[in-house]
Length: 177
Image (cartoon, rainbow, N blue to C red):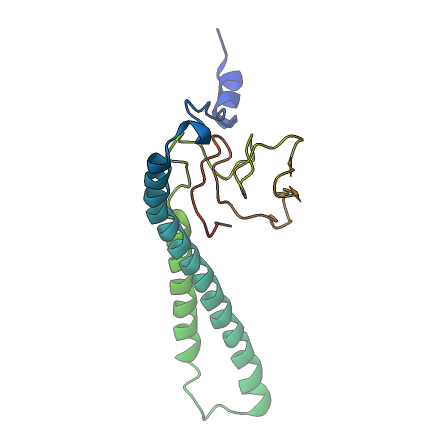
C-alpha cells in the first residue's frame, strides 16, 4: 500500500511525451496541408492572446510609472493647480489594475499549443527540431538547420516553433515564440 505522502509525488511528475502513431513522413501532402490549416487558427489565437498579454503588461507599467512620476513632479514644482490631485491617482490605479486584469486573462485563456497530428506539447524539445522539423542527432543540436537549441530559465529561447518536436510535422511557417 502506498502512503499519501508518496502518492502525492506522482501528481507533480510531468506526463510522459506521447509516442506518435505516425511521423511527418507517414502523412500525405493533403493531410499535412489540412494539419497546417487547422493549426493556423490555433496559432493566430495564441498570437492574439500573447499580444494582449504584452500590451496589458506595458499598459500597467506605464500607469504605475506615470503615477510615480506625477507624485514626484507635482509636489516638487508646486503644480497642484493643473489637475485634481485627489482624483488622478485613483484613476491611474484603476487603469493599472484593468491592464493587469487584461494581461492576466489573456495569459490564462491562451490556447494550449499541441500538435494536431500526435497531440504532443510543441513547447518540449524532443526528437525533432522545432525550427525545421528534421530529426536531431545529438541532444539539442540540429544538423539540418545548424542550430543549437537552448531553452533555459532566465534566458530567452533562440528558436521559433514551426514544427512538432514529437512527430516532425511542420505546423506553422511563421513560427511561435
